[in-house]
Amino acid sequence: MNTPMSDSVGGATLKEAPSTFNLVMSVVLLAVLPALVYYMWIAATQYDGALPLPTTKEEWLRLWSHVPAPTWTAVGIFAGWYAFQGLLQIYAPGPWVDGSQLADGSRLKYKMNGWFSWWFTWAAIAALVFRKGVSLEAIKDAGEFVYAQFGPVLTTIQIFTFLFALYLYFYGKWKPAGERQTGYAMYDYWLGTALNPRIGNFDLKLFCEARPGLISWVAINLFLAAKQYQLHGMITTPMILVCVFHFWYIADYYYHEEAILTTWDIRHENFGWMLCWGDLVWVPFTYTLQAFYLLNHTHDLPGWATAGIVALNFAGYYIFRSVNIQKHRFRTNPEGLIWGKKPEYIRTARGTLLLTSGWWGVARHLNYLGDLMMGLAWCLPTGFDHPLPYFYITYFTILLVHREMRDNKMCAKRYGADWDAYTAKVKWRILPGIY
Ligand code: NDP
Image 1: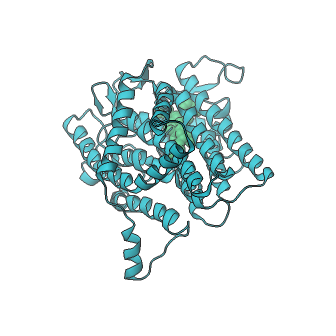
Image 2: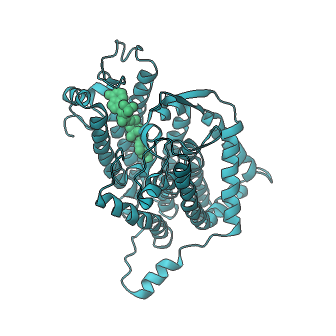
Image 3: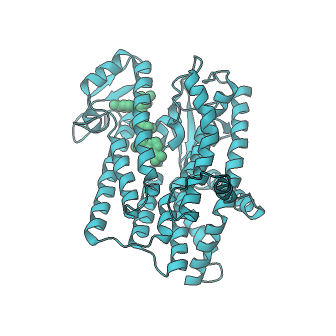
């Protein structure tokens, strides 16, 4: 699983100063993105999914009045959740695995205990929800509680990420390890000053990318389904589809957890506000928009539409998963067979191998295509009455197209003529025959 926001502002290898555009955008986005999360949540919960467009002072004030303040309960939920996930990261059983080679030739070790932690978390949530006995009432109460706390917890975590990013900023400044820093304080705050900030063996980037945000995204969905049951006495097919798709996506992530170690975010992206806020705020609080929308939109779906959406999701999943795992396996064992044959590859001057057979010989980013197919399947159950629940696929398409361009630029810089040879051989970027 990668973080969404890691692509919002171009930020290739930054030995040089950032462009004025990137500088300005980073400051603008620091203000706009947190507001956007509130806006969409308020639209989904207070305006029935319509996008409010205030024109008068009163309308602006009404919109603003829905921005919740943090509460002590919210702070308790936040602290309890993060501490619980942190303890699992430290103590849950799982193998220690070598990460990719760093610039100095060394490798960091990562504890891969996500699969255990994922299921343990569900057991703990179930124990908490049913602490007074297993009943439908307990499910409804849990849904109501989480729905009511969502806003204050959102504000609490927004504040936390701004403070935590400050810590990350100084972490790299105080412990410079030859990592990318521009010297522009705001920009370094935005993009981070260190690649792998750690407290002892505890990897802050991997933890934030992979634990509290991801699991809470799926948990919030399920609690919203419970809330729908409380409100309407049923859980609709669209709600079930969204919950199952997201649950599957994240369960699959943990099952293949090691694959994150060869992704861009872990290998190349500094850990600053952008990644941290993306992991902890953007993912859980906007990827749940479809479930929020469906809460009070209780339409059903015809059987053919359900079947089509399910097929789209799992076809996308198959492409996404097999492409990512193929690269990961190739990078960890370059001699392993690809589609039953010896792999073909380019050995770059840097020593890295670029796979040119299998999925990676068809297009350079078929993993993005699979992800986009799933993203569309997550939005379609919401119907076509409002654009809001399609925010995910719209933003995600822009993100991945931009990310592909950025990756291409970085790889061209990193690999020079070897990259030219690769792109001459593998022409398509994301969608063979079209792009
Ligand atoms: P990739 O995992 O595709 O990684 C790109 C990197 O792989 C390149 O920078 C290069 O790095 C290496 N590479 C490129 N071509 C080859 C090749 N032919 N053979 C071997 N290595 C190659 O990209 P991402 O990290 O962007 O995405 C990983 C997954 O995460 C994707 O499925 C994406 O859809 C998903 N994602 C999900 C998001 C979400 O919010 N749901 C957000 C962003 C991504 P190097 O050579 O230096 O190793």
